[in-house]
Length: 202
Length: 187
Image (cartoon, rainbow over all chains, first blue to last red; front, side, top):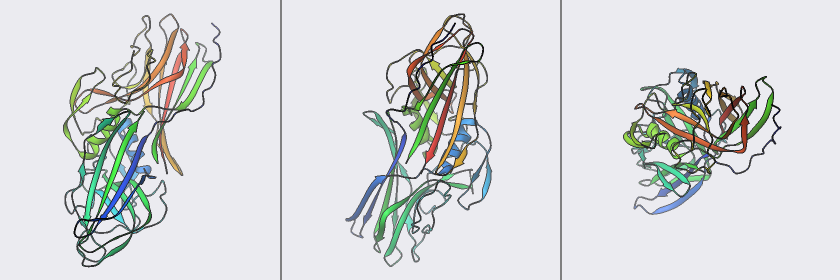
């Protein structure tokens, strides 16, 4: 039977799994002194490589947060982004790097460490909200508060991102990274809160 | 920046000649997809996700979530097609009218579902999942919808992605439909 050639269709409406962030800076009394919200620009290659690893159920080579290519198996630990208080191997991080995001970023450019020393923060636990459907969108959030107990102002915060598990222990990957539109300053005793929202919309 | 999804559909006749083609941006990461991302990221157990049978199932993070690599003849997971054309809704949990495996009336034979390796071409990283589904039913079958069914950790299956095709694709007897789904991120 001769089939009629059907017309090629151009893309129309779009749907993606979208990512957005908000950043709040508070002083030591808890007053909000700055708030930034924006669409994220920044799933990076490791995110999609982890999706690929899971969907194909096959080992893949993925770069860790030290920049080393690692052989990653499709284990239960992939994607885990939780972190307890003080754990900076996983979860949301902030840093001072201002270089634009690239698909092959594998870590924050200049991450702030854990502690009370110069340019260090006390990282609280990462907190997730469960997915909720509102209208045609299903979304959830992950949030982390980082407190400045360094004894001095920490200025020049320009980047945020999320570190994920590649294995049960040791190996971590960057899931997404964003460079803020302008530098953020966190006063001594104050805090910075980063909230990422992951959404699917039809 | 978003996690992007595109699909391409190619229909061939019994001689392998392409008789129809469609390529467009997908409309359709669904609720279950985002719930699975949440389960994995938050390392959650005991969280309910509606499976492809419409039943709420207790799910957990694990090594089985998201698998779509399915052997020939397996229709519990992998790329599927159907004959429903109701618009996609965020809480769709399955194809509206999935086409079953077989050679009976309205049935199709599912070849293996495969997933290519990722390719990084700045500013993007993407990969493609494929499945060819043959029509040996003895009659013509109109395909109107396609989906990605994924495995979930506790032995059930979820619908991660669904699209209603812009043009119904008529698959002749002896022919086949091939769905390629591209999943990418771009900075």
